[in-house]
Length: 65
Image (tube, rainbow, N blue to C red; front, side, top):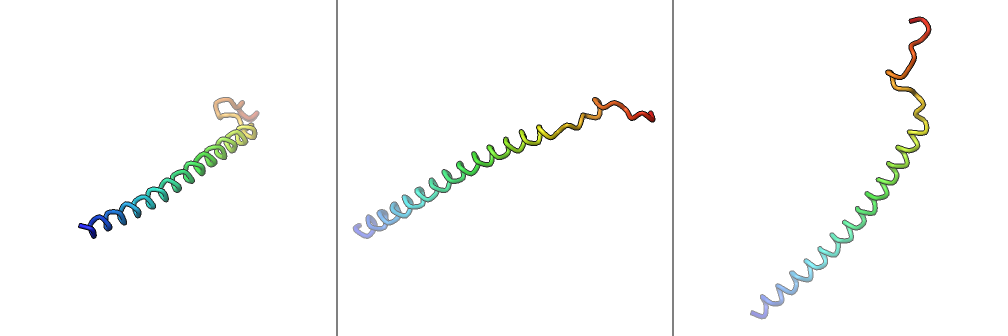
């Protein structure tokens, strides 16, 4: 019986360590995702500033038409 309790305590300790590591990983990934979302938003805004090309339906045809 004593061995079983010791084994269970060891398992719980390993599981606690695994949960802590997974929690840390998830938090780091969440930070990274938020940073990437901000970067993508900045890139979209930057591209909008430089998209002076009119849509084909908005362009006037060239003079030779």
